[in-house]
Figure (spheres, rainbow, N blue to C red):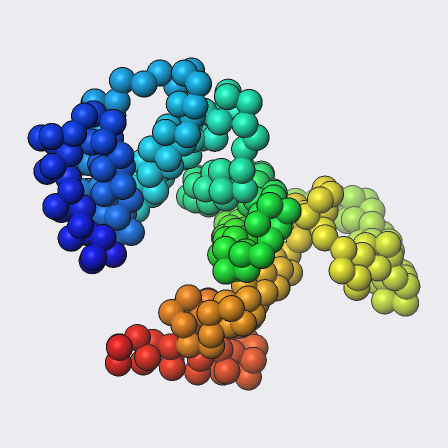
Length: 322
């Protein structure tokens, strides 16, 4: 990146003075991509803004989609780096739409970018249905990537990581909803009269009727408990297998721990691919080992977390030594 930066710092002034607009557009777009990779997003945005001011190409012109696809995606990456998620989503969708309008199918890259941004929106707005929709979009990206570029296992690992993050977000959202519901119920109990107060207010005949209802409910619960303990339902069979609960109405009933476990499944797959294709202590592998370890610690699987923590620590130490 530093060498590319040095080359572009020489080329850009030449393009401004001696070359035509087409060369300047190419230079600005390329330099913006370099700045984004350097995490210098404000400078990247300056280059892209200048580019759009001189670009006099209509999106509908033959082949123009190739130019706008690159430029819009660079805008999306830049806004994502600046934390401006809404604007990033707008440009990622524009990158997809400019292709679709030209008769070109959306790519796995489009689905991955859009799914990531939508998952962030959904998490912060606590919109579970939108979060599920984001997961479906990223999974679609995973399927398209496997079909079109399945040999790129490192990219596959990155998409798997995104799916895992989405499940973590869902689990955290479900936990927060459970806490909110518990606090609401406690508040309702605090506001309601006590049993003694109800007893003092209730006529004798109604007291007898209430006692009968409680006894009846207790017997029914006891009977239902035995049935549940001694038999398996269809739902139990699905959970024992490798069925994906995500594709039916049961997805909204999954408890937080099961969602965390689902996240762990994807994060571990991602780590295994990074480890195989980038090495055990590569920075990508180390970061993924840390993600797996954090989730295992959250699930209190302390013994399983230890080797991932060790790999993450060695990877961090290797980066510092380099």
